[in-house]
Amino acid sequence: MSKITAAITAVGGYVPDYVLSNEILETMVDTNDEWITARTGIKERRILKDKEKGTSFLAIQAAKDLLKKNNTDPKEIDMIVMATATPDMPVAVTGSYVATQIGAENAFSYDLMAACSSFLFGMSVAAKYIESGRYKKVLLIGADKMSSIIDYKDRTTCIIFGDGAGAALFEPNYEGLGVQDELLRTDGSGRESLKIDAGGSLLPASEKTVENNQHVVFQDGKTVFKFAVTRMADVSEKILERNQLTGDDIQWLVPHQANNRIIDATSNRMKLAEEKVMKNIHKYGNTTSATLPLCLWDYEKKLKKGDKLVFAAFGGGFTWGSMYLTWAYDSK
Ligand code: UT7
Image (cartoon, rainbow, N blue to C red; front, side, top):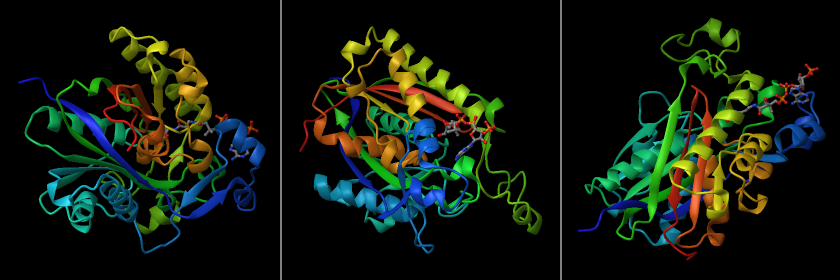
């Protein structure tokens, strides 16, 4: 029997309707469209306005989109990996709720949190379950309601993040297509540079933490930028090298959408032409766990069977990495 590889066989996505533009942000904090565009490349982001709805709502919509488009029976799904940094609530697994809501009654599920690298690390997990031969359909969802943890008075963070969700179905492939290689890294020295101070086991929620505004994202942008810009490029270059590939051999870079300048640094290091780089940061901002699958969702129609894709991400922790994958289908 030929070796089993783990291929992506369908994608889905969802972004909420409400558009938070740079112009609207100008009325909320001391910022301007020119600064945001030049420093990040972001023009607008989507926000889930309904306070009654959490990340699971976004994830459910993305999963349903995938199931419908691909005509997949949810009962056939073996497992759901829910990549998110903003679970509906602590302890109760968001993925379990999502599985039940979409009718994946034969699946088990858990949440996977690696900040902005959650989906990339989730791809590694999903691939391993498939490659083992034990499971046939693994649904990986990346979803974040970033607006639930952002301080809309802090101009250094509120201009960056948005809400969204994307999903990818992993199935066995016997032609050698799918995940080929990965290079995943972490460095705990970065934990103070991108974090939420309170609400975890180190500093549980209290009146004081609320008073001190410690339940929102803090980012030392400069430090994160310096790490991200070099680390994402390093692993992407390395994964090419060790697979004897050059930029000419690659059809697409699927980069985490945190900052246009970080994306450009990565693609430049890989010597990739601009038109080979997936970008939707201008319309969604940084959706954390959803950036990679939302890129696939937006570009799916352009992808062809056999295309060589390199994924790259960087996130809090720090976490980062790169993955080399060959695409398994022509647009349906
Ligand atoms: O996805 C997870 C990983 N995260 C990232 O990869 C994000 C990495 N970091 C970044 O993308 C960038 O650091 C930012 C976009 C967050 C910031 O860009 P920067 O070029 O590093 O700006 P900066 O923080 O050095 O700030 C430059 C100036 C400062 O003013 P002074 O001190 O030079 O007078 C800031 O106060 O820009 C000011 N500033 C702003 N001005 C207008 C900061 N935020 C804003 C703003 N509007 N929103």
